[in-house]
Image 1 (tube, rainbow over the protein chains, first blue to last red):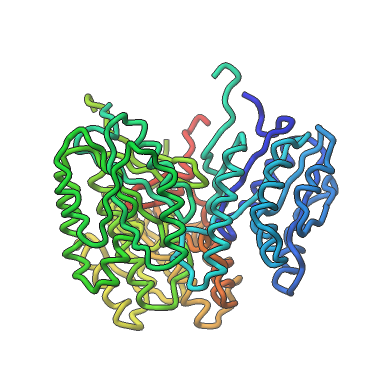
Image 2 (spheres, rainbow over the protein chains, first blue to last red):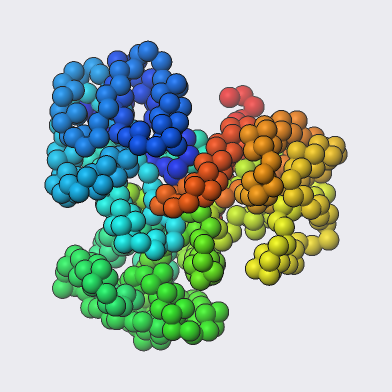
Length: 182
Length: 182
Length: 182
């Protein structure tokens, strides 16, 4: 069975807010023994977010190199050409928020990301939120966000070799790599 | 093991918004090889909804017959008396919304639906939303909806032979048909 | 394999609103054959809540002793010193709400609860809500609540021997007790 951290393999880690998904993804990354790149998509636009970023950053040791990306996630993935380097993207939800707030062409940006994910050199772990399990939001922007996020998760899950849902810090695999003889 | 599409068997497909639950239910239906009825409960009351209906409709081929039902879902199920015809109901959440908006007796409508589901001739696949995994909604109507939806899902799950949760397009079985010798 | 109801074992039952999690927890408790304590954290502050409390109470038979706790859940757990008595806490979400509304020191209260849970005499089943699977709430208090709830669930899950997610009344185990020889 190929490891989820095999070259070019994409692992999607899904979960709700404060589900422990980032921590799980970091542990999965650290267990690979590879050199590690943390692609941070959070923009420190307010104190609440700055605190979260600092909290996450404090958890990572010096094996990590951090790259900050607001919009061009496809470009950041393309720039990582070393097959023995694991790239952790945390997270697709903040990236999608950035794309929507910037008024960019959402469908085009998503397609570009999917192309980049399909041709990565080293293993990639992408963290993303499940946001569709509540009542329909009142405002149209929140509904649109929920739709884009849901479709993005489906598309990334389809090209991933492993998809894991995290709840209360505990992983539940929705998709696992196939054994070579399957 | 009886197939989830055995005569009279009910399959419940649960998921969040944009989780891929409808697509999964359609693929499950199409794989049955039976003739197919699509019971559509969406009312095209605004552009957003019209677009979603068209999007779903475009995915179904001409093996499907479509029946539009706003309120009398029990009657629509009772009308399908052909045991080799699979009925896909998409979805219970929109039907429940219609019932609440119409000011109908919600408990009575739910009981009628459960009776109809318990005596269907052919296999039925019902799609429904999970809506209770967010923060308590501010307004009382949304809270009431969440309560009715949650209880409806529990009731339908109890009489179903298979219950599958779909996340990011991937199925996770919560209940499976029992083998004959169990 | 130690039963989830072994002395000192903590079982966490997670689920959305109206997911059937309380009923599942009660059935798990009743199946233990032990004497039963129901620690109720709901405060009957409005008609809606009074109705829910009555609904839950009607379901429990006279094997149950009920203890009402608004804030001092740690104290209530410490007071149960009988190892053959099962304590069901329903639920951590309402307790956390009470703590926040009372303006108490949330982190200190959570730490005290975790200490109490780590030294219970008899088995404990704690029910809690998943609230982080919707869109980011508009208001800061709801966001703070969601964060505290998510972290609390992770912390309690980490010290539990069994963690079960309930959806549509159906249990899905996220963590199970280890067999003795593991």
